[in-house]
Image (cartoon, rainbow, N blue to C red; front, side):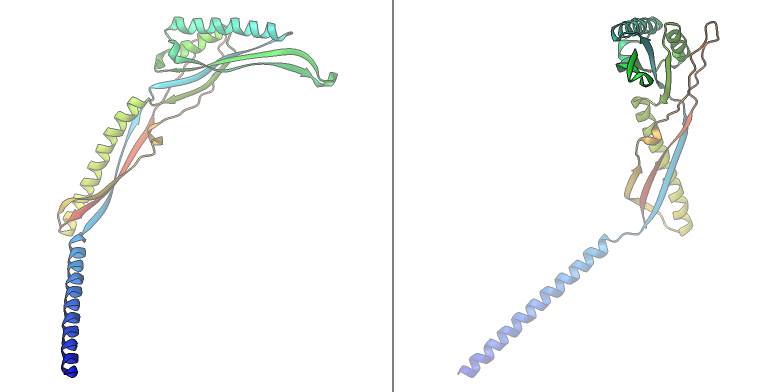
Length: 247
């Protein structure tokens, strides 16, 4: 009787193992089918676009340095000159938001040959000008110099945030069209068709959309022609990477 029971148990174990193996095989098959369905044929293409752009924003430093026997006198003379400079800039049409004080200092000047003796005091003051009135740059320089500014320079030209956004959107569209056109040509040569986009990305560090140019500015002499300042232009670019699904 016990022998028959052992046989019955063996049959049950065999049947159970068979069921487990069948279920494992079904799971493996389903997984392989899922992987197969996830596999797609693709081609990868880069797109590029560029354009010439003229900067629309200029920045420069305008300041004055004064030396006097006392710190008070140097500071007062400097303040008077900078007040006159700022009034001239405002008379040209610059607004307060376009001018920002960037540096102020008063310090002693020593004569080290006489045992570190103070011989005078130097007072400095400068303002940072940031404006989109590029046609006024020459007048800004000339009027500032005429009012007493003796530190003028550090001109830089940039593209404003609004223009950067406009350029970015336009360049992305052109770069995407470039990638699509090249992908279509490649697909036709391979005898396949593009049925969709698998992945895409943009090479965008924002730096290509900003143009900087430094120009040395000499303080003009009285009766000299207006100081010429030209922003020039620069090439800005954008790239995209697109992986297309083919079939």
